[in-house]
Length: 125
Image 1: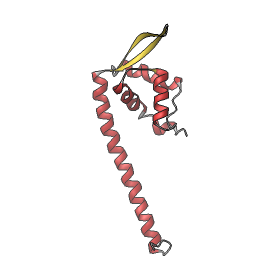
Image 2: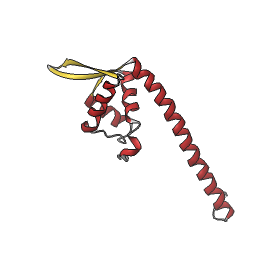
Image 3: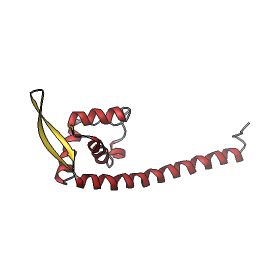
Image 4: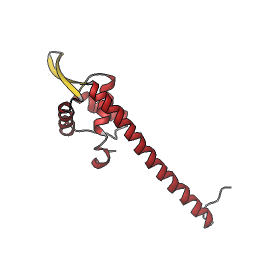
C-alpha cells in the first residue's frame, strides 16, 4: 500500500540515511530494502530516489563512488560524518512528532470511548 507523497516526503531522506548508516548501498538496493522493511509501504521510484540522493550529496550528507560489480560499474552511496549528525537530529525530530501524533490520537480515542459510555452505547461486560 503506497502512502500519500506529502506524508512521506519529509522522512525519505532520513530513511535513506538510516539505511546507509548500516552499509554502503546502490540505488536499486535502497529501493528494495526500504520496500521490504516497510512492508511495501515505501515504494520509491528511481525518479524520486536519484534526485534526492543528488540533493543529499550536494549537502555533503552522503558521498557517491563507483565500484565494479560483476563486470558492471555501480554507484554506491555512503553516509558522511555530517550525514550521521543530520540523521541523529532528524530521528529526534521524528520521535517528537510521532509522540505528539500518538498522544493526540490516543486522547481522541479515549474521549470517543468516554462519550459512547456516557451515551450508554459502550459497555464493558
